[in-house]
Length: 216
Image (tube, rainbow, N blue to C red; front, side):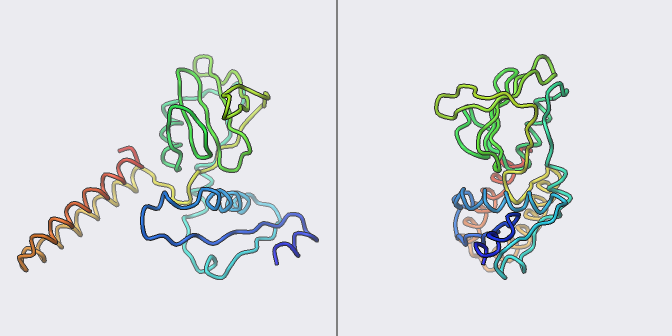
């Protein structure tokens, strides 16, 4: 259906279904995630388009579109930029901070240089600052790490469908602890020490993962 429609109307996008996994969610195919994010970016833009998708996607819940807009921004030449603030915002919107950018959804900061690879871009970008001002923006090769073309701006879009704002992470941790306390009482009354220990380990790991993603 997508191929037929796109033949007549080029501004057509295919929104693929999520993979169902029963383990670490980070193991989901990156290619599939980038395709979904690319279409979500087009949905956020107010222009006429056709989206082709499956019924299960229409019945799923998604984060508010305003949140995508809040975490979509442009970096332009001459702009004043705080690397500390942008680092926190990138982490909240699903980017991974590493030493060298080689994949989509990654960023690195070295001195006054910010490297970032937005999910909807074909190349990563190197942003050099002079003080707090954006002095240059270039695409670069991930294999050689050498700069290629100069550009005037770069659009940054979230790297994951779930945006973890700091306050949301704090609320989630608080609710997990509340539920854990309730389960503690239940298992203690049944004298089920082994299950209580396993639950405690799982809760601590979940909270550690949440805090790591939200950088609390």
